[in-house]
Length: 365
Image 1: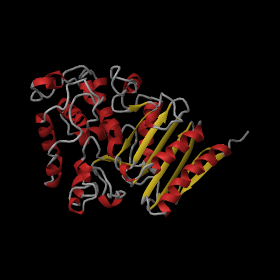
Image 2: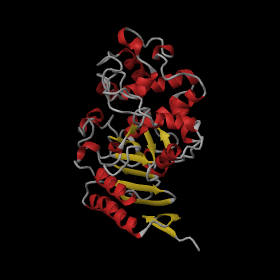
Image 3: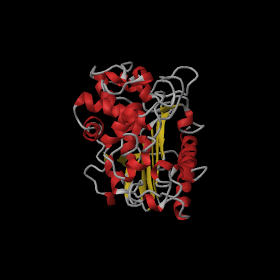
Image 4: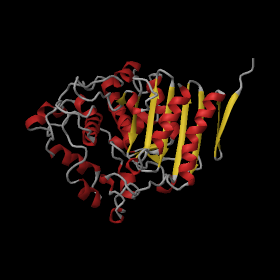
């Protein structure tokens, strides 16, 4: 029997894959309807929806995005990518998860900092803050990433290590510095070498890389995250759209990528092929590493249905980003869902990405 194919055109971009059932198609139409309306109403300037279910594929762009390969600023979806880059060194035996951070960054010491382990940086229980107290002034004067590193090494802890779950972008920054010191390679180049190239993520870069600013989707900044200026007109020189921020390459939020590339990254964890490290390392990153009483967390990834949709299984892993992005994979249904938008995460409740995610989860259930 000849296999039929499903062809979905996203404003000039087409993909061929095995046919999605009529029932699933109807439910995915509900998901695309959310973004179609959001774009038509001017709520969302640009968006891409990319879904892989088994061997079937659905991809479409919306608004000012004319191709599903358009680059979006991922924000915190960058975190699991940065952690994966670090874990290539774990795979090589260059560090252990329970090694003290000061083993690799000797000046990271004093008081409870001596007790912080690498694992705790990756699961948001190190006690480090999310953003530096001097974050605004650093961005305002276009500080180099190395100065952010210097400041976080000196910044006080907000809680004792392993005592509280406290979401920490700065923990990921310290982790990237460990990778830098072990490898001797700047982290922007290191993540390209260890993650983007092996996974054929040709539309991805930490910072701008070889891409031009005008080749990326422009973020909407009204009601943006406080650390990006919250849409204040006086923050234009350092907000999400500024050349400074787009080029900086913050390991906690500075990756630019297309939706298909994000899916390629998640696919390496959904079906590990050893392209970046041994399959057991991929599985290790998806386990809960926090003790009972603290929010469950994988290494870089959020885990459990809450990171996707109520319709997802407890095996789901993923992450969202403050710029309006969301990506998850559910091993139970063999599904990857990537929703990239330009609408800040805090600008709408419920956010279109959440409404789309819920409908995708129902479509593949």
